[in-house]
Image 1 (spheres, rainbow, N blue to C red):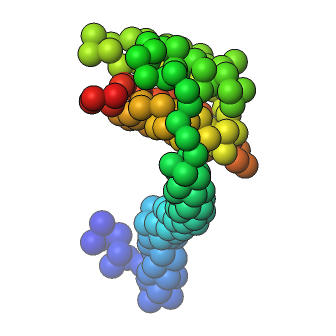
Image 2 (image 1 turned 180 degrees about the horizontal axis):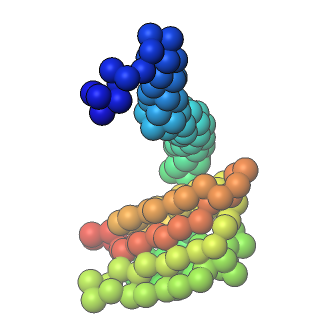
Length: 164
């Protein structure tokens, strides 16, 4: 390689050196700079989406607190005490028109019930949760995913409150 380089004239050496620099710059761009810029652009878009999700969750939390406050001021539904959890849950779902959205239901040994549901209006789900709370039902877990404007899907696990 050194012999070949020495055989080149000054002009040819400069031309090869410039070509090598251009090639090196192209490789740096193609292998480092461009992929890095793509990652940065993707991460920026992800941040924008996560900020939108956060704003939506904050609004949902405010609506949930308002509904909880409203439900606590109302009298609890009559005759819910002593009823089986499944009956109370079914009634609350039916009252908000959510019973047809249930895609799965399982009852655990501890007496809790887990349901999964397809997209439902978030406000209706909040009203259902408020009525369950007023009926002495405790939400053990709630896993929601936003699927559209005002729509969520996910799963819910409930149990009777201790002493309730």
